[in-house]
Image 1 (cartoon, rainbow, N blue to C red):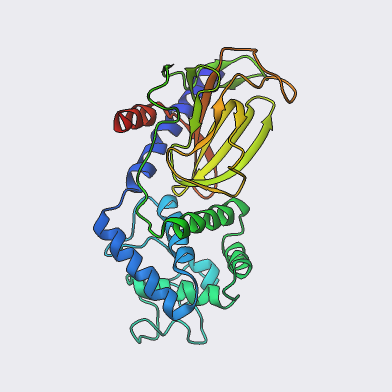
Image 2: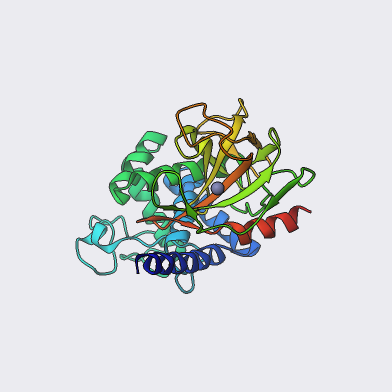
Length: 312
Ligand SMILES: [Zn+2]
């Protein structure tokens, strides 16, 4: 019974992971429109466009779809602004009366909503620290604030929100093999399931980032050995484990892009720091979706297949 329950949960979670990935896709035309709205708002509020874009990018992942008639996804939480569950009036003192000159923010207008968001942040100031505090007071969640700050960093580096390239985590020229083993039982460390895909390859084969993102974690983990975690702009955490070593030039907080080498294939893990060789060398690659409340593992296999094809 327990086993059935667990596999049901896995199936449900893996299904729900897909819509958020597909709905995050936006057209190039919408991206251009979004960019111009962010930049326009930046000019009138003093908040760099990259932060406005990063907040909007984050909200694109936590809602199923973008509101009708809009290209941006940010939805002000009425309880936060009003204390009641009604269309936000934003700032009762009159901050909401901009955009198109109305007294109330038009909830269908991208411009009105972004302007109000910018004004809200501006009330804290315009430095990175000010923005961080404004975000924390709104979202009250560390991972959300960190994700938005990281995404802003990525947008700042590449100066665009259109970052759709992906790469395969090992060079296609290397000898490698992988099967769909997501959800398999695992012996070490008690009752666990296998939350990822194992890509078998030789010691020392370069491991590369599959996506644009920021390095969030780097170091030893009892199960994963030497491992790296990268958070991308779609609120997805990419986990690379059992590495034999790291790329020294890549540190926590650094921006990466698809194909950037972050380490090399090894067999570390399943013990205290430095433990190696308890299983054949392979890259364990995991993907975790965050929806603003919870984070869950989903099957990377179909994505790996797609990226392998695209890279080839
Ligand atoms: Zn694995």
